[in-house]
Length: 214
Ligand SMILES: [Fe+2]
Ligand SMILES: [Fe+2]
Image (cartoon, rainbow, N blue to C red; front, side, top):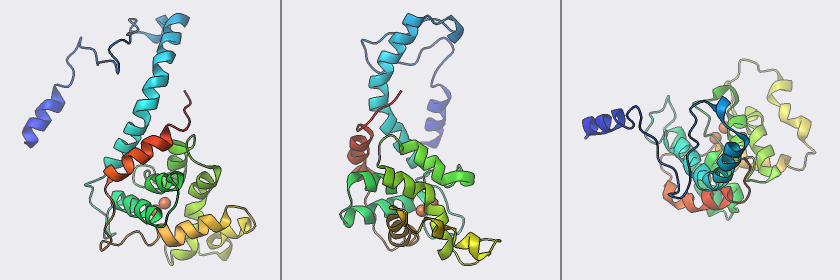
Protein backbone atom coordinates (compact mmCIF):
# COMPACT_ATOMS: atom_id res chain seq x y z
CA UNK A 1 0.00 0.00 0.00
CA UNK A 2 2.77 2.39 1.00
CA UNK A 3 4.72 1.52 -2.16
CA UNK A 4 1.66 2.12 -4.33
CA UNK A 5 1.16 5.46 -2.67
CA UNK A 6 4.80 6.39 -3.27
CA UNK A 7 4.55 5.31 -6.90
CA UNK A 8 1.41 7.36 -7.42
CA UNK A 9 3.05 10.40 -5.83
CA UNK A 10 6.05 10.03 -8.17
CA UNK A 11 3.96 10.18 -11.34
CA UNK A 12 1.55 12.94 -10.38
CA UNK A 13 2.47 14.97 -13.44
CA UNK A 14 4.71 14.15 -16.39
CA UNK A 15 6.58 16.91 -18.23
CA UNK A 16 4.22 18.49 -20.76
CA UNK A 17 1.12 17.58 -18.80
CA UNK A 18 -1.16 20.31 -17.47
CA UNK A 19 -2.90 20.24 -14.14
CA UNK A 20 -6.64 20.36 -14.49
CA UNK A 21 -8.66 23.51 -14.07
CA UNK A 22 -11.20 23.60 -11.24
CA UNK A 23 -14.11 24.05 -13.67
CA UNK A 24 -14.53 22.48 -17.10
CA UNK A 25 -15.53 25.76 -18.75
CA UNK A 26 -12.50 27.70 -17.47
CA UNK A 27 -9.52 28.59 -19.65
CA UNK A 28 -5.77 28.26 -19.27
CA UNK A 29 -3.53 31.24 -19.91
CA UNK A 30 -1.16 29.80 -22.50
CA UNK A 31 2.05 31.77 -21.89
CA UNK A 32 4.76 30.07 -19.84
CA UNK A 33 6.29 33.28 -18.53
CA UNK A 34 4.23 35.69 -16.46
CA UNK A 35 6.11 38.51 -18.14
CA UNK A 36 4.15 37.62 -21.29
CA UNK A 37 0.69 37.74 -19.72
CA UNK A 38 -1.52 40.53 -21.07
CA UNK A 39 -3.96 42.63 -19.08
CA UNK A 40 -6.76 40.47 -20.56
CA UNK A 41 -5.00 37.35 -19.36
CA UNK A 42 -4.79 38.75 -15.85
CA UNK A 43 -8.45 39.80 -15.97
CA UNK A 44 -9.46 36.26 -16.94
CA UNK A 45 -7.20 34.78 -14.28
CA UNK A 46 -8.67 37.01 -11.61
CA UNK A 47 -12.26 36.19 -12.60
CA UNK A 48 -11.53 32.49 -12.23
CA UNK A 49 -9.57 33.09 -9.04
CA UNK A 50 -12.59 34.49 -7.16
CA UNK A 51 -14.53 31.21 -7.48
CA UNK A 52 -11.36 29.22 -6.99
CA UNK A 53 -10.57 30.90 -3.67
CA UNK A 54 -14.15 30.56 -2.48
CA UNK A 55 -13.92 26.82 -2.92
CA UNK A 56 -10.28 26.00 -2.33
CA UNK A 57 -9.18 28.32 0.45
CA UNK A 58 -11.08 26.48 3.19
CA UNK A 59 -10.15 23.07 1.81
CA UNK A 60 -6.44 23.85 1.60
CA UNK A 61 -6.40 25.50 5.04
CA UNK A 62 -7.91 22.30 6.46
CA UNK A 63 -5.26 20.30 4.65
CA UNK A 64 -2.52 22.34 6.28
CA UNK A 65 -4.05 21.46 9.63
CA UNK A 66 -4.56 17.77 8.86
CA UNK A 67 -0.99 17.40 7.59
CA UNK A 68 -0.01 16.91 11.25
CA UNK A 69 -2.79 14.46 12.09
CA UNK A 70 -0.50 11.50 12.70
CA UNK A 71 2.58 13.42 13.84
CA UNK A 72 4.39 12.23 16.96
CA UNK A 73 4.83 14.52 19.98
CA UNK A 74 7.93 15.86 21.70
CA UNK A 75 6.56 15.22 25.19
CA UNK A 76 2.94 16.28 25.32
CA UNK A 77 0.51 13.38 25.75
CA UNK A 78 -1.26 14.33 22.52
CA UNK A 79 0.02 15.93 19.34
CA UNK A 80 -0.61 19.48 18.18
CA UNK A 81 -3.39 18.42 15.78
CA UNK A 82 -5.30 16.76 18.61
CA UNK A 83 -4.68 19.83 20.77
CA UNK A 84 -6.38 22.00 18.14
CA UNK A 85 -9.32 19.57 17.93
CA UNK A 86 -9.70 19.54 21.70
CA UNK A 87 -9.75 23.33 21.87
CA UNK A 88 -12.39 23.50 19.11
CA UNK A 89 -14.44 20.72 20.72
CA UNK A 90 -14.53 22.45 24.10
CA UNK A 91 -15.49 25.77 22.53
CA UNK A 92 -18.29 24.09 20.59
CA UNK A 93 -19.60 22.22 23.64
CA UNK A 94 -19.70 25.47 25.60
CA UNK A 95 -21.92 27.00 22.92
CA UNK A 96 -19.45 29.40 21.29
CA UNK A 97 -20.26 30.63 17.78
CA UNK A 98 -18.72 29.21 14.59
CA UNK A 99 -16.32 32.16 14.31
CA UNK A 100 -14.82 31.30 17.69
CA UNK A 101 -14.81 27.52 17.20
CA UNK A 102 -12.96 27.90 13.89
CA UNK A 103 -10.48 30.26 15.55
CA UNK A 104 -9.87 27.61 18.20
CA UNK A 105 -9.46 24.93 15.57
CA UNK A 106 -6.70 26.86 13.79
CA UNK A 107 -5.17 28.63 16.81
CA UNK A 108 -1.98 26.54 16.87
CA UNK A 109 -1.85 25.47 13.21
CA UNK A 110 1.61 27.06 12.96
CA UNK A 111 2.91 25.78 16.30
CA UNK A 112 5.35 23.31 14.72
CA UNK A 113 6.07 24.89 11.32
CA UNK A 114 6.31 28.51 12.51
CA UNK A 115 7.41 28.46 16.16
CA UNK A 116 8.94 31.96 15.86
CA UNK A 117 5.44 33.44 15.47
CA UNK A 118 2.73 30.82 15.62
CA UNK A 119 0.05 33.32 16.75
CA UNK A 120 0.78 35.48 13.70
CA UNK A 121 0.71 32.45 11.41
CA UNK A 122 -2.83 31.50 12.50
CA UNK A 123 -4.04 35.10 12.63
CA UNK A 124 -2.95 35.74 9.04
CA UNK A 125 -4.52 32.50 7.85
CA UNK A 126 -8.01 33.32 9.14
CA UNK A 127 -7.90 37.13 9.49
CA UNK A 128 -10.42 37.93 6.68
CA UNK A 129 -13.03 35.57 8.12
CA UNK A 130 -13.23 35.98 11.89
CA UNK A 131 -13.94 38.80 14.34
CA UNK A 132 -11.44 41.41 15.45
CA UNK A 133 -11.91 40.03 18.97
CA UNK A 134 -10.74 36.57 17.96
CA UNK A 135 -7.82 37.88 15.92
CA UNK A 136 -6.69 39.97 18.89
CA UNK A 137 -7.01 36.94 21.12
CA UNK A 138 -4.99 34.83 18.68
CA UNK A 139 -2.24 37.41 18.37
CA UNK A 140 -1.92 37.76 22.16
CA UNK A 141 -2.62 34.25 23.46
CA UNK A 142 1.05 33.34 23.74
CA UNK A 143 1.79 36.39 25.90
CA UNK A 144 -1.26 35.66 28.06
CA UNK A 145 0.03 32.12 28.61
CA UNK A 146 3.26 33.31 30.22
CA UNK A 147 1.82 33.42 33.74
CA UNK A 148 0.85 29.74 33.42
CA UNK A 149 4.13 28.30 32.11
CA UNK A 150 6.19 28.07 35.29
CA UNK A 151 9.88 27.68 34.57
CA UNK A 152 9.39 27.64 30.80
CA UNK A 153 11.00 30.99 30.08
CA UNK A 154 14.65 31.81 30.75
CA UNK A 155 13.51 35.34 31.40
CA UNK A 156 11.58 35.28 34.66
CA UNK A 157 11.50 39.04 35.01
CA UNK A 158 7.98 39.81 36.36
CA UNK A 159 7.59 42.55 33.74
CA UNK A 160 8.03 39.89 31.03
CA UNK A 161 5.90 37.20 32.69
CA UNK A 162 3.10 39.68 33.42
CA UNK A 163 3.38 41.55 30.13
CA UNK A 164 -0.33 40.97 29.53
CA UNK A 165 -1.12 43.50 32.29
CA UNK A 166 -0.46 46.33 29.86
CA UNK A 167 -3.78 45.38 28.24
CA UNK A 168 -5.75 44.90 31.47
CA UNK A 169 -8.34 47.46 30.37
CA UNK A 170 -8.48 46.31 26.75
CA UNK A 171 -11.96 45.17 25.66
CA UNK A 172 -10.59 41.76 24.58
CA UNK A 173 -8.47 41.11 27.70
CA UNK A 174 -11.08 38.98 29.48
CA UNK A 175 -11.77 36.82 26.42
CA UNK A 176 -8.07 36.18 25.81
CA UNK A 177 -7.55 35.27 29.47
CA UNK A 178 -10.57 32.94 29.36
CA UNK A 179 -9.49 31.29 26.09
CA UNK A 180 -6.04 30.52 27.47
CA UNK A 181 -7.29 29.18 30.80
CA UNK A 182 -10.38 27.26 29.71
CA UNK A 183 -9.65 26.19 26.16
CA UNK A 184 -5.90 26.17 25.57
CA UNK A 185 -3.64 25.15 28.45
CA UNK A 186 -6.00 22.31 29.43
CA UNK A 187 -6.41 20.93 25.88
CA UNK A 188 -3.57 18.42 26.31
CA UNK A 189 -5.58 15.62 27.89
CA UNK A 190 -5.64 12.22 26.17
CA UNK A 191 -8.71 11.25 28.19
CA UNK A 192 -10.78 13.81 26.33
CA UNK A 193 -12.82 12.64 23.36
CA UNK A 194 -12.65 15.31 20.70
CA UNK A 195 -14.98 15.76 17.75
CA UNK A 196 -13.48 14.63 14.43
CA UNK A 197 -12.26 17.08 11.80
CA UNK A 198 -15.24 16.10 9.61
CA UNK A 199 -17.53 17.66 12.19
CA UNK A 200 -15.79 21.03 11.81
CA UNK A 201 -15.39 21.01 8.01
CA UNK A 202 -18.81 22.52 7.13
CA UNK A 203 -18.27 25.13 9.82
CA UNK A 204 -14.86 26.05 8.40
CA UNK A 205 -16.38 26.33 4.91
CA UNK A 206 -19.17 28.56 6.23
CA UNK A 207 -16.80 30.85 8.11
CA UNK A 208 -14.34 31.02 5.19
CA UNK A 209 -17.16 31.95 2.80
CA UNK A 210 -18.04 34.97 4.93
CA UNK A 211 -15.49 37.20 3.27
CA UNK A 212 -13.14 36.72 0.35
CA UNK A 213 -10.23 38.79 -0.78
CA UNK A 214 -7.96 38.24 -3.76
FE1 LIG B 1 -0.53 28.75 20.88
FE1 LIG C 1 -2.75 26.05 22.05
